[in-house]
Length: 320
Image (cartoon, rainbow, N blue to C red; front, side, top):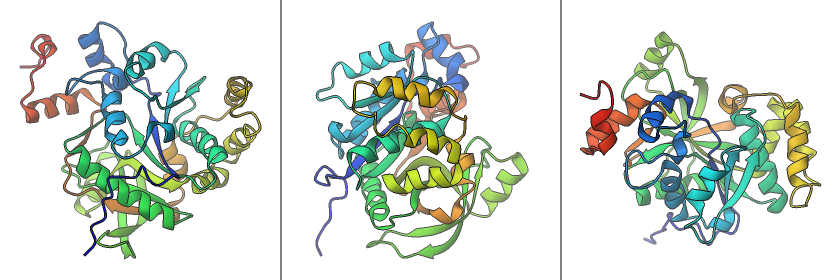
């Protein structure tokens, strides 16, 4: 049997990483303010190790995808934080700055248009920058599978789902349908329904039915993403599609500002994933410990599991 190393994606010239790093981290604001004495967005905070969450994410994806095909989407006003994170990296990834917060749909679809213009055959893996992953190599092996499937399923999006441990209302949920043909030993499922941040009763029902948490890590062809944007958010798509003649020119920043000025605000999960389940397939994240560190409760729980006690923990109110 020939062993395929799915952690090494550097040889695939059309594989891109899209790192979402533009959030304000409001749910974690009290904790990051305690740690830093300022309103630092969570992706630039060191919470579970010796590096910020963003640097951990970049290092993880850098195992498989080179910086020249990595795009960090950030927000105006975060430049100083981002520069501090990137100054020790060589080469550095591309940085795509949004002038305003128009939601995750605009962030992802702007980058999809930006990448597609440079590489019409691009296959993109999208990741937030506030996750804990215990085994980076094993995780990137799963990412290799996601990319491989997304490359072949040209019009679909491959969502990476995690096995839930509780009926969490702060995550998106994927209700699984029939198994789909995969590659090798990869098991795929049709997504019968996607529910973003359900109420408690719905979360309990999904938990008991065997649904998966959405990690918000997914892969798709750049063209599939922009096509879904055109179908689900036509007004946003029209504004972003008009950028193509300005991207990579001296007018790029101005054109993005114009496009964002009256662009609609939209959640990628609600506007696309909930509305187009027929475009989705799910893959289970197995053999990897994963956690979204979006809330103080999850950060403190993960520190307890790791047996890590940073200095700031001793002065945290109610830390015990």
